[in-house]
Image 1 (cartoon, helix red, strand yellow):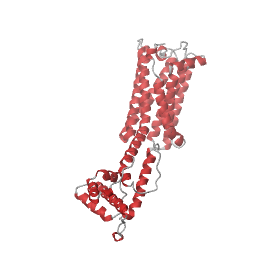
Image 2 (tube, rainbow, N blue to C red):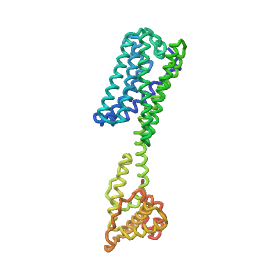
Image 3 (cartoon, rainbow, N blue to C red):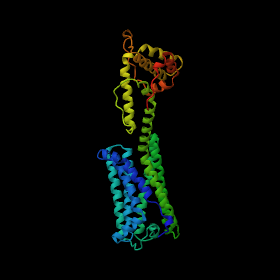
Image 4 (cartoon, rainbow, N blue to C red):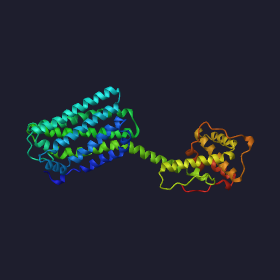
Length: 396
């Protein structure tokens, strides 16, 4: 048994993989029966975390002592690793899609092949003579032992093939996606390439034993840290697309919520009957509430809206060289300021002016809110209209 200074923190990658599984759990519970992608990714994360939980030296000792069989934990951990390999290939098959019959046929082939590998692991272990418990260097210690030699090559070969195929297919998929999904796939590719490095290091140490050399330190001290780093990349690769999109949505909602504050301030004097939400409400709910406040306020302003004011403001904005969308936002902002001022004075728009024309598309509330705060045209209009048209600030 090696010194504790070489202890690899198995629980760290195991915990991160479990976190990735927990993050995806709500989606898995919802779509488990109808989406094979959800099942394959969930199984992959569960098996990957189990490999590290069961691969801890303390767990290995517990498994061996509880069964009374030296090194009984070896075929168990290698079985979990082999099932992880099968999950990787099944996940890739589902990602690629295609003819459902071909997908099912390929999945059955993978299942049969890797079931045969699992059976081979237990058969070879049953025939092998492994009386000395080895917790960290079993692969090299028994590299020349009949049947155990085949046992070791079975799991390493299955792992190498699965990681190579997964890395190649995932790399090819990078050209077809973008954004957070692409970032997650990049991390997955790195993780599976590092898995191939793990296999290379292990196989090098085993081949060295076969040729009469001693490179056991590669298997004992180099391979386990590589495996831990692999798990980190794979776990974060699965977490990133979902967590990144969620964080991006949260930041976008908060940004829009803050940007709409000037619009709400402008309409603060109107009694729209909207209830105030608790400040601890989710930002998405607060954003919907703020948009509803603005919509209710605009409905209240309709009788006081003068379409001629908006048309003049739009023409002036276009004449100043503003882009059409920005000019429309500026004109809408001026029209809102004018309507609020008319409402405060109790002066409705003249009937002969007709109803306000329906715009070709709904106004961009965020752009209008920015214009209410920053547009020189709005500031100039306020100055011409007098101080009565300035809104009172409300908390954002």
